[in-house]
Length: 299
Image 1 (cartoon, rainbow, N blue to C red):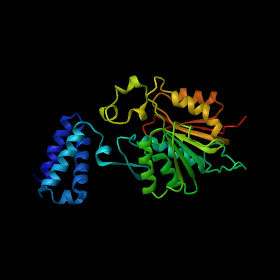
Image 2: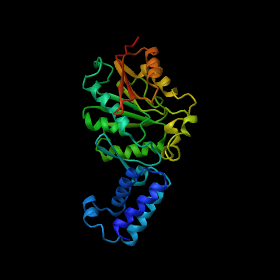
Image 3: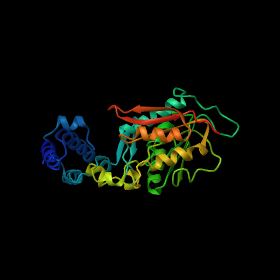
Image 4: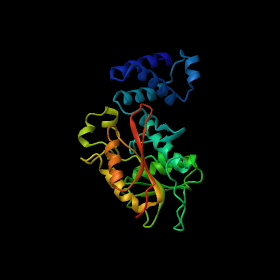
């Protein structure tokens, strides 16, 4: 079978699996490149070259997995996020473009562009100390460490398997010495008395009864614990809003991603918890996606 024939057959299998035609075409090419280690140019310039038996087998296996609606990122083992490539496995949520808004907002805070920046105090925290809750693959923490070289990041996750992935990503991007990974639920593993300038999170925010309505790539393959396991979809926002003051420095800030339609409720929760300067930031589709609650004042 030639490369061109393989792509035609793959496109048909993917569209038969209800994957949109344009997406199927792009993904077939990506999977052929992934399984043959050939460049896009090589595939375009020599479409009539036959695949070797091993190439055809690897490509066929990859297409079969995608036709079962397994996410492309789990098949290739990586996903780009904020200009960086991250390893991903079924143990972590796949990084999404919407979450890049969290990184942008935190970087703006660190660069003193949003709200009133915290001022270092004798307690040992610095203006670049950041906590990332529910870190998963580590994409937020590591992107921050790469783009804010003076930042010191602490990241927590309840899943040890997720932390294994995050640790590998931190090492791959050369920031393992500035990203401290802790195992535990939200703030539980954070040492008492630790203070942060910014606390960031993309927590689980989907109610279990809503998961059944999601695309099969999400519903059937991504870790349920990272999507949402509490009947109250705002469970983690309530905890972050009311528990974070203990871990925030004077004038510290919280930055979180929220689900569609949740921004008003989460803003209200943070307001009730004592935050001011609450900013709601849209994603590229104009959907309210990130909340930056700044200028917390310790009682």
